[in-house]
Structure formats: C-alpha cells, structure tokens
Length: 358
Image (cartoon, rainbow, N blue to C red; front, side, top):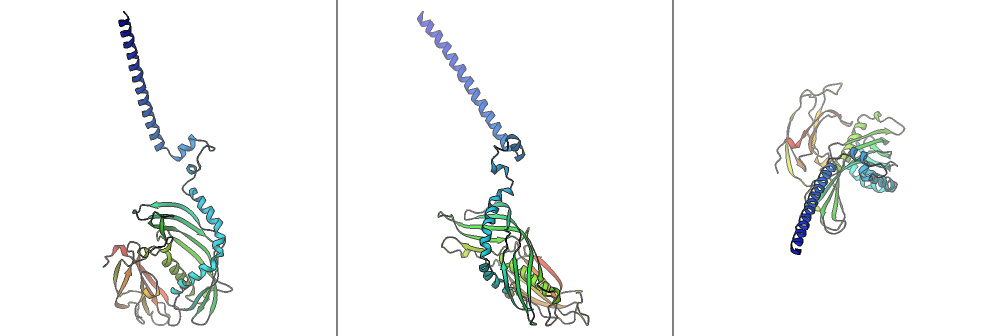
C-alpha cells in the first residue's frame, strides 16, 4: 500500500515540477522577448522621445545638449585662456611677419606690424566630427567661427616713399579647423604629433582695411594689393594641403610634412578681347600663374605692349601637393610701369580634373 502511495506522490510531484519548469521557461522567454523589444524601442528613440519620457531634473546633460551645445565646455575653456593668448600677441606677431613678407606685393618696399593684438573675443567651435582614418592616426574636424575685435595696424611703405598706417578691422572667419593626431603610440598622451590646417570648403574670411587718418583709395591699387597679400599669406599658410606640425613627443615626423605629389605642365597660349584700361592706346597685358601664391612659385609672362589679344605661347611647370583640393590660378594684368598693375581678368582650374605626371 505504501508503495502505491509513494508512486502516486512521486508522479504528482514530478508533474508539478514539470509544470513549474515549463512555466518558468515560458516566463523567461517572455522576459527575453520583452527586453529585446524594449532595446529595439530605445534604439529607435529620438531626442524628442527621450525628453517626453524623462523630466528635466532626471535628464542626463550629455543627452539634453545638441551637437552645438556639446562644445560649450570647449568654448568655455577657450574663453578663459584667451586673455593669455592675447598676451602672447607679440610672439605671434614675430612669427607672422616673415610670412607676410613672403607675399608682399612689388609696389610695397616694406610691410610690418606696428600693432598686433588679438582682442578680447575668443573663437567659438560650433561642431565636431571624427573622420575615419587608418590605425596610425586620428583626424578631427572642428567647425569654427570668429567675429573678433583685434587691434591690428600695418606699417605700409610704398616704393614711392609714402608711409601709411593701415588698420585691419571687422575680421570675420568661418571654417573647418582640422586636427590630425599622428602617429598613435602607447606612450601618453598616445600620439606623437599634431598637425593642424583649415579646409578650403566651407571657409570664409572677411576683413576691412582703413588708413588711419586718411583714405586708402588715395593710392591706386593699394587696397587690392594689401587684401590679396593678407588673403594669400593666411590661406596659403594654413589652408589644406598646407599643415603645421607640432611635435608632442621626441621623434622624426618628416613624413607628416607637405610633399610634392606631381607636376603640372601649363602652356599659356593667348587671351582675347581684354578690357582696355588705358586712356591713350591699349592695355599692356601680362599674366601671373600660380598654384600656391608664393613669390618663388609664381610664374610671370612677358608683357605684350598695346594689345588686347596678346599671344604668349609660353610653357611653365608647377609643383602639386594635393590635386584633390588645389587649383591653378591665372590672372591677367595691365602693366602700369611704376604704378600698381590693374587686374584685367582671372580664371582658375581645378587640378582634380587634370592628369598629373608623377
């Protein structure tokens, strides 16, 4: 009798265990399904959805902030250190002056700074992105704008003996500041050097020139020559593919320097129907060609006197560093002797559309 009682009890307990196990597995399966659905729902959530879900007092700051606001911490620190950067203006001035001298127009005998301060308004970063790169480095792009209040005065001396103090004012800059951390190393701070540059795309640089106590238009061609000089000096000094290298750890970083990637052969044939800038006779055109507006890299054609349809048939070669971003510039001027030449026309050719000989 006890045998049958034990058998019945065992069967009942076994069935009970089976039922409990099945229900437990079903519950676990439902939990897994619900969890997967929840994770998928979170993956589809937008910022607005999360704001409706959580109150402001519980909402994480790193989610609340937009892409622009995420850089508030960087802008805040930059604002704090900007007064110290401004105090180093003399050091910046001494490093910029030789660059400016490289691009000094021929009508000027001297071009120096008499005043140079960066002002009290710091640049602001409005966006950041990390570009895909190889395992040897990391590239970061920072969108930046600066409506500064610097105090910059140029001491300009012309070849005619005229000396003028020219103020550079109302500076506005918008561009993409590129930082390349390379090479990556195991030693802190985990990279050997930093390269910085400004991308050509999405870039704008504006300023105004004013002669202190006078009118800059009183000397024909001076305003245009100075504007070209400042633009060329700044753009060709820090615009990609030109980049500045700052070593962080001891080492050889020559592989990061700007290097030739090809040669561009150009034949300057002729120009047609040029504008006549002379009251007596016709213009005396000549051409200037360059990829980078450095004085030693700029090619100048011969002057064709009294002709609005000049024929040159001259050959030139140019060094190319980055065909994907660089352009060939051709400018035609009217020679005015001792006075500044007048621009008759200009053109540019994107090198990426050409075949380069390496």
